[in-house]
Length: 432
Image (cartoon, rainbow, N blue to C red; front, side, top):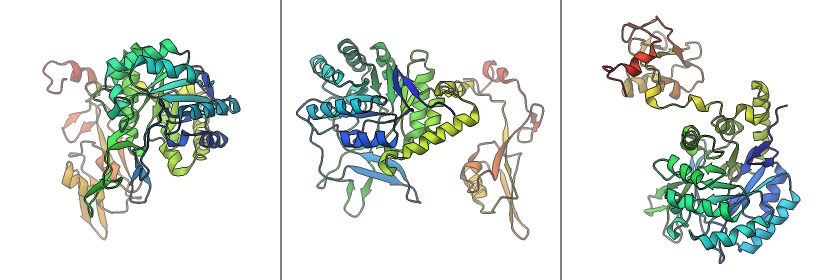
């Protein structure tokens, strides 16, 4: 059987599934339950200086639901831990002693002052924790106080604080990055320049979840007022994967270990992060929606996949998909695909025809001879894939690659394999 144990920065855990710094990792009771369920590690909910912050005593969460009532987006306005620092530290110490084979990372957020970091780091080190994660990503509440994303959006601050932590602690330093920024490579470069051992991403995205149109109030509200929160869940996964890939293929951060976060609900989600270079993955929303035991399906699913594909260890599959991520101007503009409809499984719903006719290239014909019938018009099809994406029956509409020499009926030209001419010819209008 495949070995899914993880060795991230020298931190060993029985699997790569860690709980992210969030409500599920707020106290000893929760973390013990998580480890009993099988989680490989946790990032303890972010600690700060005393006196502890005060959280709202009202709605903290909001959800974006699919039509079948599945949570696809999750929002929270909860701040860092509101429990005294000494209580958290004592609990971390006890949990680590009870579970020495699990990864224990402690998330930290204190003012952007050297003395504040110098004071808290030895306290965390004394607990026996395996590493620290610098919370430079929290977009709400703490950012208004000059912490969290307020630091993560300024590369100079990231480098400075990271360097302080490397100076005053022997523990591995993971820098948690905010997605609320134009180019995630810049903070990642700053973290590396400051001596970070790894980065983790993404933290939550600024969001307002909705409006109560009857009361004309944003939702959720606390005593009639609301505030933007942090958005996570399955809907953010594509954003997170892009940012992970950007860091992984940036020459200035290539090789920097990454812990992937964002919308991981199944083993397949985790495998995608690992395939793009992540060494571990962190999960929050899935645990808050389904409970801690979901990790058991994640572990068994990942093991089965690795067995099927012949990957013996996580390292065997880590980063395998990263070379496929390129800039747009590196794509092969001579590659041609056309849609194909399987008439045996087509249910004649007509959705493909409607969307192609209204919003795409009018490349699907319709006729009626006893029942509706749809065909691809190859001379109009540009291979955009829209019909495949909206078809309700899997594998009923697929894409066929035209082979070199085959005539593209849309252009009347033979398909060529001469990709270089497109990207280098000075007179090519598509040249970037």
